[in-house]
Image 1 (cartoon, helix red, strand yellow):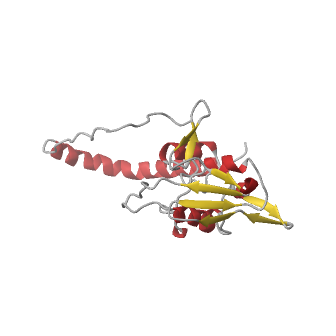
Image 2 (cartoon, rainbow, N blue to C red):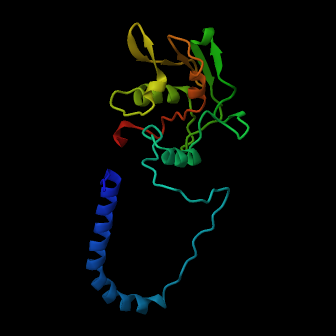
Image 3 (cartoon, rainbow, N blue to C red):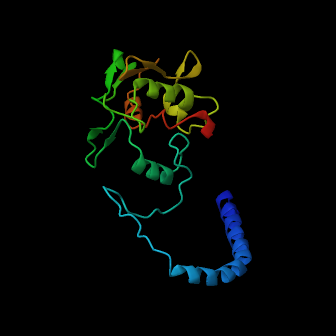
Length: 207
């Protein structure tokens, strides 16, 4: 039987739980009488009821990460897709739905420039506005960074003058940014349309 990294970690975790259970058994027995004596004077509070819309379900496996920049497996993307929005998404009929976008992405200059305009009512949890600079920062300093192991960095690269280079993100104004390419590549539009780009929740100290 091949011992994979995940199986090894799982075995270690189970061993730790068993060892902890043996050591705690005696303490639990001794503490049971004390808990029984105080239980009568303890008011049991009900858990708060869930409000708003939510999804209840089960996962077929464990997510490796909930950080979308590091995710590379289907389960992780499944969790991320339920908790984070992006520029847009597709419905069951493959119609493109705008989320953060004010309007659809514009393809200019024969496919060399992609103009992206986000809504002007987007806010972070602290009330500060989401701007185009947040998106450009995410690409330049996280997705395209040498120290970041972004699994899909290749989707944002192209060949130019014999070298592999990243596309060039550029802030146009507070709500508009552009992606400039050296070579036209029609499928890049779909990469951009379904990408989650965040700055506010990410910083280098997380990795």
